[in-house]
Length: 484
Image 1 (cartoon, rainbow, N blue to C red):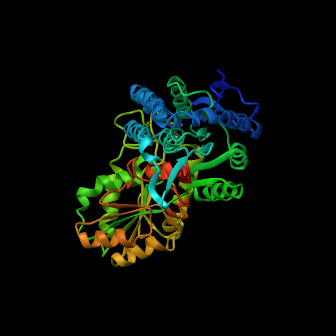
Image 2 (cartoon, one colour):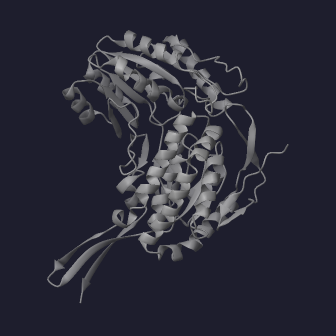
């Protein structure tokens, strides 16, 4: 049976792209073909951008509180369909259903926060601010068409970091979901249409590299949001900025979890395992290095190995499963290769996730929890992003040495410390060069009303996603000086 070919959503209509190339969309737990995703051309992207551009003048004139009411209608639909959406995430991407439900809630949180845009985009003013009888104020105005280029690992949540804030501010939008996991966002945009947004305000274009570059180059696109690998983030930032666009590009990571000798490892173990192996390690906040301080490396590695061995790997739809598959056969093979490199470099495997099989899912893309001990700071395991369920334990003499390792990394997405010592915790948050800091929290994910941080080569841009940063990214300030 031929798989359904997905369509783009442009100007309020589902339309077939002119491009004829397409990719199979596969369930990572079964290898079943779920649909085909079109690889839209630059011409297809132009149609979507033109529709968004045409919708902008009228949408910009809608008062902010009325724009927010469209989001409230959308929010009610998300609440009604939250379980359906969670199951779709699991089918699309592979993470466990429990994890997918958490993703749905995080996305809903962002829509709820964006509803408050009448307050978030307020300006400020001062009577006689310029001189006697001359008043001065700042107002924030929308710019036009924005676009998001989205990753596979959070197919529901990450687009909602961006477009609800953008359209609440009065802009119009084009979403380009990952071609690996397009089904979730396809359903979300169906709910957008049901919520009554005017045609052209929110558009969806499927595609790969050509569609991405077309958005980066298009003269009517005023800004771009991106989440993905560091090389692609650098490309997005450079190419979009070269054509005068605003850019927020979240890149890769090599997140470290520091375990101090005073930490209650038994109490924190589930938290550490969740950080390292949740979503099969395919999170930009996943812990991939554990920095063990003051001679506790062997104990930490053994605890992680015991915990990882107890995790059940399988289809994320099974409620008894602790970790689902990775997103694709290509990802599985890349991760398996990285594990082999770690062995060759001399690190010691305490648990090996290669060759994991799931009896009722023989064609799934499974890699089990993998833990390396005796990792040296010069090994690829300590330096390179793997983006899979692989963690390396590195011994450090003291906290200063651990902080030096973190700050020497080109990445700066997240870092966590496990400790009972307030002095150590404060020193950590004060000195560590990372945008998201956890104190006894393995996944330092900001709530929707705070920005999602990132520094160094983990973020390219100035204003981050979520919270007040979002309201500033999607608006331009204008100073008005009045004398009557």
